[in-house]
Structure formats: C-alpha cells, structure tokens
Amino acid sequence: MKERKIILSEKEMPRKWYNIQADMPNPMQPPLNPATKKPAGPDDLSPIFPMSLIEQEMSQERWIDIPEEVLDIYTLWRPSPLHRAYSLEKALGTPAKIYYKQEGVSPAGSHKPNTAVAQAYYNKQAGVKRLSTETGAGQWGSALSLACNFFGLECTVYMVKVSYQQKPYRRSLMETWGANVFASPTDLTQSGRDMLAKNPDSMGSLGLAISEAVEDAAGRPDTNYSLGSVLNHVMLHQTVIGLECLEQFKMVNDYPDYVIGCCGGGSNFAGISFPFIHDKIRDDKNITCIGVEPKACPTLTKGAFTYDFGDVAKYTPMLMMYTLGHDFMPPGIHAGGLRYHGESPLVSQLYKDGLIEARAYGQEGVFEAALTFARTEGILPAPETAHAIKGAIDVALECKEAKEEKTILFNFSGHGHFDLTAYDDYLAGKIKDIEYPQEEIDKSIASLEKV
Image 1 (cartoon, rainbow, N blue to C red):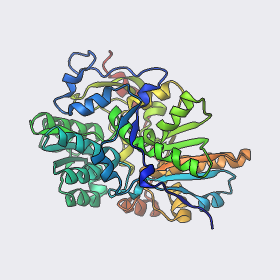
Image 2: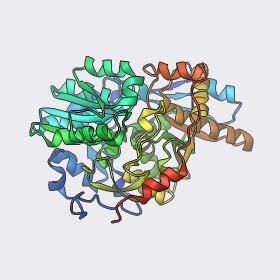
Image 3: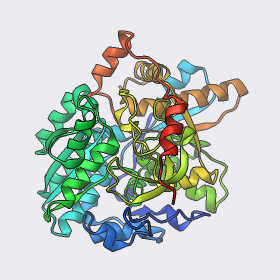
C-alpha cells in the first residue's frame, strides 16, 4: 500500500519559529513613519501592536521560541500532514513526485491560525481586550475570530464587501466564534465614509479594509490591530509549516526541488518556503521557490519595488515592497485572499535578490487545476490554494516534457468548502480570465509618493 500521508508526532513539532532576517544576504529596508517619512521605531507601532510583536517584527535572531500556550493550541491540528499526490501524478503522467502540505486541517480551514493564535496570545499577555482586523476571502477573519475566542478577546472584522457577498458562510463562521463582521467599506470609520462618498458602489479592497481596521484600533485604548499577512512577525509565525516539512521529508528520505505557494500578502508562501530558503542560502541547496499570484492582481510580476503605504487611507507605515499602488482596486475575482496591492517586504526583498521566482495565472486555468486536483486527490481547494496547485501542475508537466524526476512541494493553504459559489460560477461558465490593464498599473504606481 502506498504511503500517502506523512505525519510527525506532537513531540517532533517545531518548538521555535525561523526568522529569515538573520540569513538574508541583503536586509530589507526599514518601514517609514507615514507622517515624517523617517524610519519607524517601536513608539510608532506601539499604538496598535503589543511590544512583544514589535520586537519580533524587528528581530534579527534566527530562532524565536514558540510559547507553550501557543503550542498547546497548535496541537489541535499540528503537526499537519504532508501528502504524496499519487493520483494527481498518475493523471498528469509526470515522472515528478508531488507532495502537498495540508494546512486545511486547521479548525478555520487554512494556514491562518498559525499566526492568529500567536497574535491573540501576545495581545492577551499585554492586557488588550479587543482586536480589529480586515479580511479578504474570510480565512484570516475566521482564524482571528477563532483565536480571540480561545483567549477571551473581542474581535471586529472588516470584510471586503465583494467577499462578504460572495462568501456568506465565512461570515457565519466568524460570528459563530463571536466576532462582529462588517462589509467594508462601512459608514463606521472616516476612511470607509470617504470611500462611500467617492464611490457608493465600491466593492472594497484589502487596502481599504486595513484602513478601517487600523482606524478602529487607533481610536480605542482597549483595542489593538491584527494583520494576517505582509508583516515580518506574521511571516515568522507561519514558518512552522516549512519546518515541519523538513522533518517530514527526512522520514521519506526525500527533499524538494521546487517549493510552491500562492502569493497575496505572502504569508503561506513564506511559511512553507522560508525554511527551505534557509537551506538555499546557508547550505547552497539547489531549490526553486515559486510564488503564484493572479493576473488580476500581479503584484510581484508587474508591480514596482518601492516604498508604499499598506492601506488606502495612508494610516500604516510605508513599506519597501513590490506594489501596484495603495489606491489599486483589483477586480472582484473569487480568490479574495490574493487581492492585496502589496507584497510582504521580506518576500519582496527575496524576489528582488533573485532567491525566489513568481508566476501569474488567469482564473480559468486556476479553476481547471482545482478541479483536476479535486477529481484526483478528492479534496476541494480554496481558489487561493488553487493558484499553488496550478503552479505545481505546470512544473510537473514541465518535468514530463524534460523527462526529469524532480520532487515538487506545494502548500495546500486552505480548503474550498466555503467557496462553492465560485465553483458554481466556474461550472456554469461564468468565470473569465481578468488581466489588470498595464496602463492602470502604471497610473497607480506613478501617483506614489517619492521617498
């Protein structure tokens, strides 16, 4: 019988997160205070983040201990299984071996609780009573709602309106765990009211929802802001994924030639790839890491590497990253978690340095890949995850063409059980490829403030 699933014991689960800042050949540029345009320090971040997370954001230590309270909750679903996709390999006729890390087994159905639990814990330790956040497809909002429930914190979620309408059961899941969920833009914040005055029919964006959540947190002394991607401490917490993979590959005496993840803000891609990039940098491992994004929001493949705000209203620090411009309003594709205008500064610097690669795909090919996976491996992927699957399938077919027996690893970052409306649309022929016009990208980037 084929060994399809490789699982570590709880004793083998990582006890430390890996901080790639300790090993990067070129350090990332510091965040800038949005008002002064000078490097932002702890005092600039303390109104919305606890000091423990600010320290992790700026840390250069290679290994950071995972608190026991966080590990205890991780054991509800971690270690997550690593699967060999034998049926998919057979269907493709590829000599490549395809593995996927199954992060959809978490209570929230995605990789997002890896950082949500940590962030809720550190905020609870700091005496915070309430967290505000944004969410695109609803996976991050679900994860933070779950984590706040565990630690007795209130949770308010500003959900991008197009996803709020497309994915009503994600909202139900958040509310089940006690969160208050609002469709962004709202009339509850100044940034939301400004957008509604400009465009009453606005379907929102992650950049705008971030503005609302930051404004909410800054306006209440009992509230902090929590972000599900982009920032360094979020990338750090997600490395538990790749660290587990390293141990699981030892169990089958294998090692990946390719590591692939979908890319929006960068958290699941960073989580699975950073521990392998450690091996690439320090041990000269010949490994290719690929971030896959939608053509409708091509941040890495068509964006500019420059300082930009993380949100529409310019509340956040300016970050050196690949960006399409903070005013970018992406089309309402079903992969709502990949509709962010910017990319993690850490991922951006690695891409700038040539340590990782990026590909962009249209919706039709992505959903075709999702159905291929569901019909061979039996698991329905989220539209975001389907981008990684499309990337893995393409690499596997390239191996077939070249007759190369390579090993491919991708992150199955979340299941698609709350995304059946998207599959209904695809099966009905309603989903079409959308490629954001280059002239619109150029216009948005040209309007950025020069630093």
